[in-house]
Length: 239
Image (cartoon, rainbow, N blue to C red; front, side):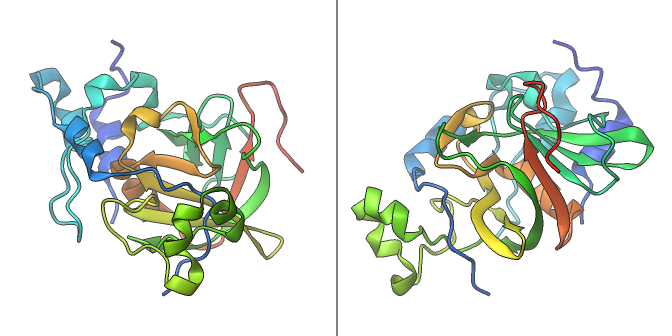
């Protein structure tokens, strides 16, 4: 396995960081049974930095378990790469074809994260902004989703949504995507379903491993520009 990106500089970059939530199109699929899959595996000495990046976060309001990163393709680990675009530093770019999220940085570089995406027919593409962000958000499915999944009615806006916690489909953090001043209903958010990274399985939102969304959350502010497009498929950036 190529671990050349795990330089001390990349590690420090990768681990640094220092109201009501809106409606979300993300589907509620999480259950605590999934956490049984997240038991950490033995860590060889050469992977101590990965173990630190994806280790447990006991100081969270809802302590996060370690992620068994050994079961995840290494290309989806958080790492510093070249900026794949000419977008200015501080821009988020979601490459739907590669299942990557880039946060552009100075010097032609970017922090890259692996992501899971929505199934065909639910995906959103375009330019927008991160209107605001929340730690341990409430999840409120939109009426259209409740129409498809009536069992979610108990989490409707009228019922106050689903409270934060390990079962909440928005995970530990959520960043809310707006376009032209309107809520797109799509989010960048955490997920305990680490095996979904690199796949298209959710109802439309961009999901990251919880440890990665915590890292991204600490790097961006409100009104951060975001572009969602298929870079890997040869598509250009939306205007």
